Figure 1: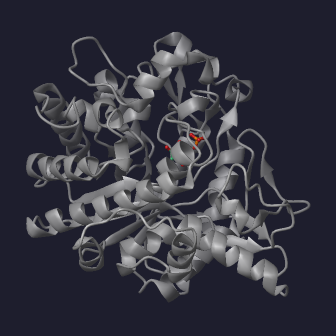
Figure 2: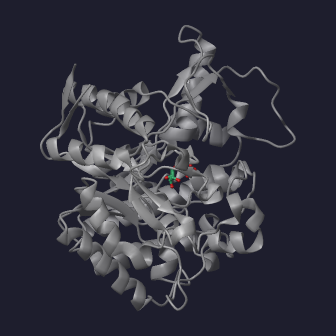
Figure 3: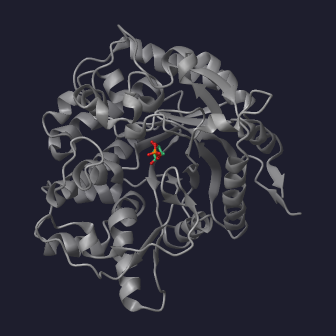
Length: 465
Ligand code: BGP
C-alpha cells in the first residue's frame, strides 16, 4: 500500500461553465449565444434533442447545489459568467438580474467555504456579435475587453481567481476547422484569425485586470494534449509531433505564459500566406501581459506519426497536412467519449510546464471521465457506484503527486465536473459529475460514490492504495 499525501492548502474541487449548467427561465433577461441559436435552428444535431435552455437549472437551484458541493469536499469551484447573460447583446446594456444572480451565487459559495474561480469565456459567443463575425471581427475583441472590465468592476473584490478563456483552441478547431460547433466552417485562414483574436483578447483582459490592482490573480485555462510521436527514434515522427504540439498546445500556451507565438507556427502561417490581420501594438500587448496562473485541462494525449496519407489539397490547408494521427495498438480507451486514457500524460504536462514555462503557478483545472447510462450502476442504496471514476481520479492523482514531489508547482485538482451537465452537442449523453442529475425527475441531484470518496480525500488531503 502506498500513501499519497498532498500539500495542506491544495485546491480540491471541480469545474463547470455557465452555458452548461445554468439553464434559462422566462424573464431572466439572458440574451442568445451561439449554442442557443444553433439549437433553435438544428435541434437534431444535439443528443436526444436536449438544448442549452434545459441544462441542470443551476440558475434556480444554486443554493441546494452549493450544499452538495460542501458535502463532496469542495474547497474551490470554477464556473463561468455567461457573457450573453450579463450583457445580452454582447455590447451595451448590463442585465441587472444577471448581476444579482452572480453576486448571490458567489456569495453562497464563499459563505460555505468554497472559493469561486471565475472564467470569462467558455465557447459562448453572444449571437449579435457572431452575426458580425464573432472572433473573426476585431470589434469582438473590443467588446470582450469591455465585458472583462465590467466583470472585474462588478465582482473583482469578491473573486480572487479569474480566467480569460477556457480552452481557446476549441472555438478555433470546433468552429473553423472540423465543423464540430457553430458556425461549422473549415477554413484555415479564418481559424488563424480567430485564434489570434482570442490570444489578443486574453492579453487585453490580463492588462485590464492588472491595472486595477485587485489583489487576485488572472490566468487562462488550456486543454493541453501532450503530443507523442509513434516512434521516438524516428526523426520524422518526432518532427510531426512537434508541429502538432505547436498547433494545438503552444499556439495558446506560449503567448499566454511567454508572450510570444511559437516560431514553428509563425513559419507555417507565413508559408501559407495567412498572417492574421493585426494592429501595430498587438504583439507588444501580448508580450507584456502574460498570465499569473495556468489552468490545465487534461483528458487525452495526442499520438502522431509522420505524414503518410496524401494531403487533401481540395479541402485544405489543415493542421493534418503536417502530421498523421496515430492509433497506438492496445491503447486504453474511454469508449463512451472515444478518448484515450493515458494517466502519465498529466505528469508529462506538469514537468513540461516546470521545465519550459518557468514553473508558473498552475493547477489541474479539468480531468474526468464521461460515461453513458450510469443508471445501470445504481445499487440498493439508490446511489451510482462509479468505482471506475474513483479509479480514474486515483490513477491521475498518483502522477500529479509524483510531479509535485519532483518540484512541479501544481496547486490543485479540479474534476470535470461537479454535477452532471450539458456537454455541447453530446448534451446529457456522457455523465461526468460527482453528483447525478435526473432529468426525468426535475433535475433531482444524488451524490455518487465518487463524490463521497472525494470528500474524504479533500478532508484528509491523502489517499492510500
Ligand atoms: C472540455 C470542456 C468542457 C467539457 C469537457 C468534456 O473540453 O472544457 O466544457 O465539456 O471537455 O467534454 P465533452 O463535454 O465534449 O464530453
